[in-house]
Length: 104
Length: 335
Image (cartoon, rainbow over all chains, first blue to last red; front, side, top):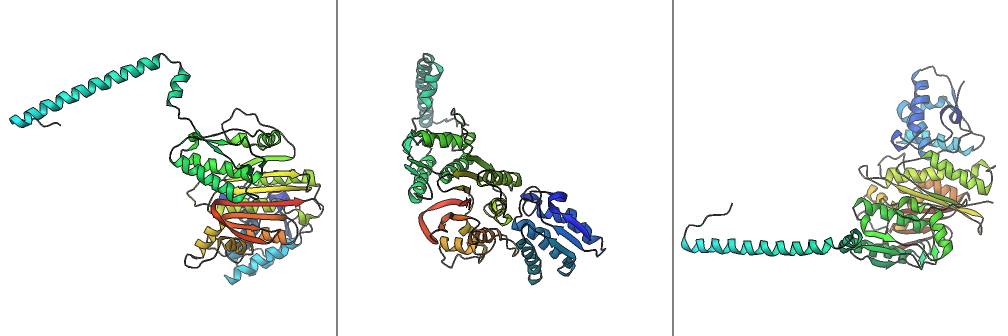
């Protein structure tokens, strides 16, 4: 299983939603780390480690993972697994963003 | 091109006109000579002061606080704006203020910034409080970094100097979190480390929702350690379109009468959503509200347009005067 640790692989200070909002956006994270994995069609599960960062804005999480679901579909996002010992409620939050995409 | 009149009547008219013009130019030349002679006998500062209009002294409310004296402070700024629109020179008199709160300082800065974009900055000046503690607060807040002044900056470790920006600045958000952590101790319970996301949500909301894309989007932020209440008090402000206006426009509520304060409360609860017409957005305010209901933050106050929300009392109220922008203020306590 491939592991992506946001704090060490991307940024300890994740930003907001888009590139235009500021540095280390959810869009940047999705395009640089998530989309290449999904485009490769390997089907390998991906573990997203949320620990170690200063925190996450809702817009970052929604654009990173909700945006991924909007591009590849909710079913494709079942490959994603999450680890968040510091803030366990983040996992439910992210899963909510992914689930909401199907309803739109 | 002047007509050349050839008839007798019109020829006489033409001669008279030329004679009057000649007299007028002689008088004008004489006046100018007199004025220059008078000015030549003056030094530079005296010559300059002749063209300088004496500013009107406008007394700042003694309780200079938006949270505790909202109507008077907002009315004051409206009165000053009216004077400035008449191109009057205005001097803000802070000498006798007895209270100075961070949100009033930020509002003063944002108001001056918006006026400077319209070319009014040269008409505004001010003085400093007589009260030494308030004078020190003004100096240590970083206010002087944003105005032309001969006053020197001060330093107080318990005051995070005013920050401002035009987009989401995650490094600034981290520095604010570090400031609070320094006085409140390490956040062992990670759930309470909502400091960083809260600041980001405020910046993101300001950047994405308060302004049109063509406008200059700016926010201000300040934090102060309160030894009495053993908490860090945060204030965030922008002078864009307030929450009620953006929500009402999003939902096209022009024909439905809902008060600004009700719109603020509804936006907090996520009942009305974003200006961008994208349903997956607009989760920032509900997130801040969840931090409040979970007890991670306290004393949340939001003032926007004519709406006023206070979490302590659960009060929502309408102001008589319009607050241009959005103010958020909240506390992080040690326990």
